[in-house]
Length: 543
Ligand code: VG1
Ligand code: CO
Image: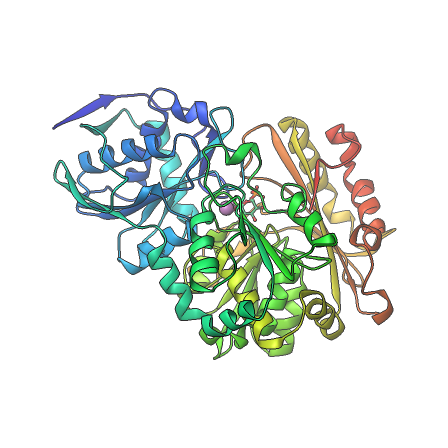
């Protein structure tokens, strides 16, 4: 086996976004594209010499080919060992767990998460640190800087490694250990939740459907729900991972997982239903006749997590991304624990989790997780819900109604305008920025503006500052509008408008969200001129 040094040139635009570098698959397959970025990863972490890594992905098109390239580059760059999920599969939370459990120096996850897959769709690569969490901004900035100057990369000339069989082999001087992607993760879940109690729930006829959306969670959900917890075979739908996710968007929301929503709203509704995304870190929660918004799910879990053995001691604190509704803040208030507001993206929770300041965190984009790993975790959230349902004996609907009766309800919706012209979207944000100082005191349909600013985050643990994290306009009475541009899209710009209204009147807790939010929605357009700027009459996706 020969190590070769390949001459290359910097490639423009290799800037990691909210969660790693995402591009069209064909772009990633282009000459030197993947290799340059992997070389930049090594440079961003001061080299791979003597280090060990975890490697796996969500099984999308190009997953295994990319894994072979990364392995050959790791071997050529002096890494001592790479632990790979069988067939190059690992869900994002399972990868995070393996990094922590096996104490590696980090890991590379191949995924574009909720973005569709296939040769004409998206691919992605992200680096996680030794704590199991996404690389923080200073590290991803170093990687981006490296992409602008690198001139060569090292790679081994070798045949493909057999990734289909569990066991160890050598690639040059490096060990490659292929592991079952599910076993360690399933063991971890068993330490957190009362599996015996959940088994009793299923044995008593409780019904559930889990839509794995032909993505990576299928094997995890089948093993845990059907084999460990005794849910009937057929509980997991679309459980076989496919390179193109069966042609869908593996995004667990009422748009892309509509068949599941239709099922719970119909006559044959199961007691409980859930779905997860491409790489298994997101979750959608449904009950008979009810959809639980991710922000509400976070609040309910925070209120009741102590019912699961892993959280019986209570929560140190909670954190949510800024655009996430403030439902969880009310729970934290009532419990007398801290509640942190961070920028969008899981990397901002890492320091708080490492420092033991928070136990639970979540995002409005269907991400919830805890200090058991350093990523959001779809199946974990589903199991915590199951544990709570088993303990309380309540239906999802009653649990939610009970929550709103106690804390009030934060009506919430996110409107996405996808693939809009990037220059116009930036111009709209710039115009909004310019308006911010004049907004306080002005009155709109949504009420009087109390404050308006662009969110910046000062990390209380390492004192780093992250600016430009979304524009927020808060109204008297607790309504709020947030505007930000997505950092995960691969075409043009995606404008996200986050809409929230608080209601505590017991007679107004069961409205349709879009009705309850109608004044806020109109106000958002009035202030930002969304229609005029995007040229769209309506959002592409409402979640
Ligand atoms: C989106 C979500 C964000 C999430 C990120 C990664 O980012 O809004 O909350 O952390 O995706 O999730 P953006 O920048 O497009 O709004 V995943 O499951 O796609 O890795
Ligand atoms: Co994801």
